Length: 166
Image (cartoon, rainbow, N blue to C red; front, side, top):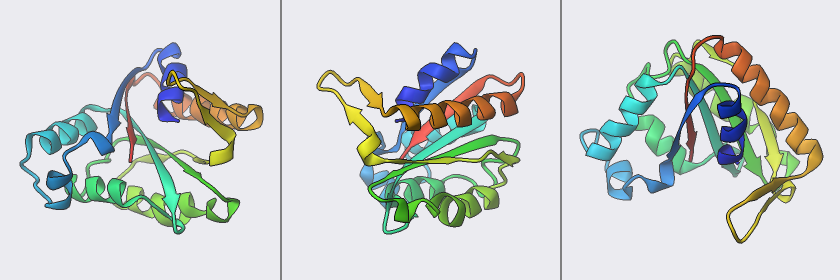
């Protein structure tokens, strides 16, 4: 889903740097290897970014353990001075509050200067084609466009966005 939003942010003049947490080495994440080159690079990307889009699937009313593993390896105040857009996907509206009750407090504790209102998208509203294209149901697409535009506006003139999915 984040790669879908990358296009909109790029069209608005932002440099978007994708970070797929699942591509980081599992041994570094699970072993809490702060010095692993991939973790050092991920930390540097967060530091460089003006804004961070955090996307996660929701499992059992919380963000993914994979994302948690990365957040645990970042410096305590890694999001200081950053504008953050939290996004989540899940199979049921029963998980819609995971952004506000699970993810937002962690992002805040990491020093995020401004956490814009996020969005939860149902899995059924997202269709991936065999060629990797993504189709989002019209209602969800419009809502995602609005939250993305608010995030872009909140960034002001700052242009580097890290779009991390876990």
